[in-house]
Length: 259
Image 1: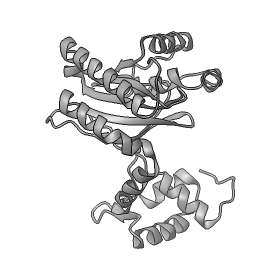
Image 2: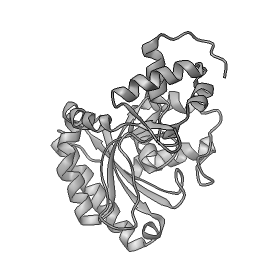
Image 3: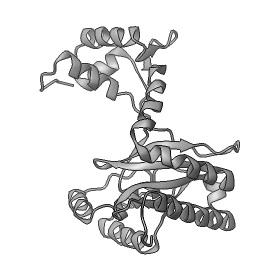
């Protein structure tokens, strides 16, 4: 890949770190060099500095690099920075205890859904949602819930940019009018559901959390394996618990309206 923009050393280091994502957690030097357009020598030099400071580690067998454990130290600081993550703890715990499914808290960052907190199901067969995981706003229950309840101006501008929707699975809604209709339905019923739109075999239930001004703060979501999602009785129970918990969470955040 030919590099068209000149970056300083700090910018290059940040570009390298940001290349480590859930869908590509490890990189070799030459592969990363080709992806970013930096010379192999530059990538190697920066990775060595990052490795020396525990930001990345190198697999002795494959020689590939992956993120280091230093980032776990940031999680507590991040949770302390955002009041909603502190306030969410009893609600996440209650949902896990009652539904025995993985629960996660999501916010909108640009045109992505980002998971900022989670608690995993205690069951052997479970869905996972790592903190920091991202997905586009058009795919999945938690993403579409964020889009359905966000500011109308942002939603309309975002939808105008979706001239072509890239499917993540064969269940992803790719027709813009169908997506608009689904968002309207989500807003009317107060929650979102999806199955296999982002990851095959996984279902999602999601409800909004509002602040004292009635503005969307986050979405509270449950992730279920498909086999339990298709159990109508269990799914309805989970949905009722989720919506009730999201309402109570919103009240704690100062919201006094109807969701």
